[in-house]
Length: 435
Image (cartoon, helix red, strand yellow):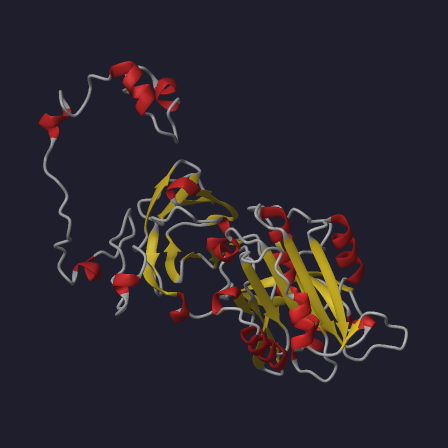
């Protein structure tokens, strides 16, 4: 930049943006036709003529690496493999991932830095792209992640511990630069600290866990994670869906890049193995949390008009973020209805919040169904049935676009899906949450 005749300030006017108009204003004549034609060396080959053993030779991570040769028979149907590059200043190292997709969000990238190991996993459709590097120098714990959405570029900015120039990024670790189906990847865990727990019902608690400062993780709507504890020398894992800390305070849930807290509504089973151990944890203790899993796609909300939610007990947890998202982000939405099945009134999670939300937003209706109510109960009673569903699942218009989400104990979910098919709802109109 220091050699630019117009100075650095002039160049910086186009920094990070399309500089074509600015260029044309100043020196339109410096173009391919008049000048650059003489500089053309040749065109890049469409197909790589790289020998098969090339990957073995290219060990040093100094710049862009060739894309992974993932052995996948369905490779033709997979998205184009991402690639990455890096650059540095005196104090920062920026790793850039080129996803070659335009609809990438912050929740598509998971970054962990532990014991000099840098790990960035990017989820693209049903595929996983992993950067896994032993960094050549130390970095500070905190880093930033940002997305340039219109070009699908992810920038991870690391802060150097010492202001020295790196000659290379580091050395490759297990599965580095691999692009494979998500289902073929193992679970990766990081230790999270218990910040708070509070009673919600007589047997359900709201747990708040804090991610490490060296982790960027946002769980996509409708997906779950696994919690892992070591109990009597054995690792035990259980799936749970993160929730908002409340239905009302985060009515429009902010997507914060530095959101470090994850909330879970968990029912404690006194005779269980996992949940009593979780309940006995003290504030400040640690629990391992996996990367997100699940097949719910936010694209199912496109042009949605009617959203029906069927939940039993803690099967309500995936519905919380879906409810928040639907009421704030789907312009075509006319109606959201939740049918919430429980044994007794004391079992209903966040009853007052649900009733306040229904009062606040006229598009939302809530119906409670109890299987073992007291004699004072005036609402609906029983279990999931054709009669209950046929009355509940009324479209706002004859051919409105519908999505039905269902979650609860396995018998409830299986019975519900059968009944929905009997009511002529198609497979595409039903999403069941099962872990």
